[in-house]
Amino acid sequence: MKQPGYPATFNSPLEAGMRSVALLGAAFPQIYDLQRLVAFDFLLVHTGDVGGPDSLHPPTPYRSAELLVRRKLVEDALLLMMTRDLVQREVTSDGIKYGAGENAAMFLASLSTNYFFAMKERASWLVETFGHYSDQEFRGVLRQFFDDWVEEFQSIERSMGGA
Image (cartoon, rainbow, N blue to C red):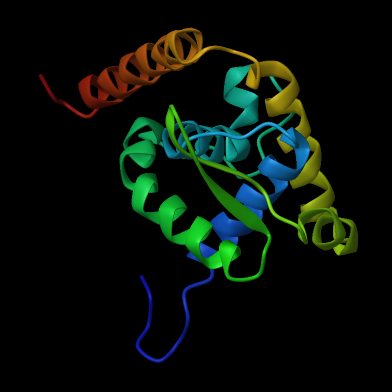
């Protein structure tokens, strides 16, 4: 919970913005819509759940609920990163899409902590693995993992005495 007078750092627009820039930098020159970026943001921290490298963040119960609250966070993150030319917005015949901005490559090259190296590695893995999927194919992948998470949630609920 955010304390009064202190900026939020965990799952803040800044943190999500860094993930978005890493994803879009790895995907350049590919551009994605908001829905794909929301899903990629979720998968970036949970790559271990989808057969990728170890997850960036530790596993948490009820991960499927996380995806539901990410849309506004990622939207705010993209707007923040656009103010620094790290992300660009394009209007296409398919709707609004986002790509790496003019300063993204230089910005990403300047990040040198182990956490950011791991983030960039996972962003590259995600783009290489799922970046070329059509929206329909990608939804199928997400549905498969959500089915697993729902099953996990139901088994936890049963073990806690639920229905």
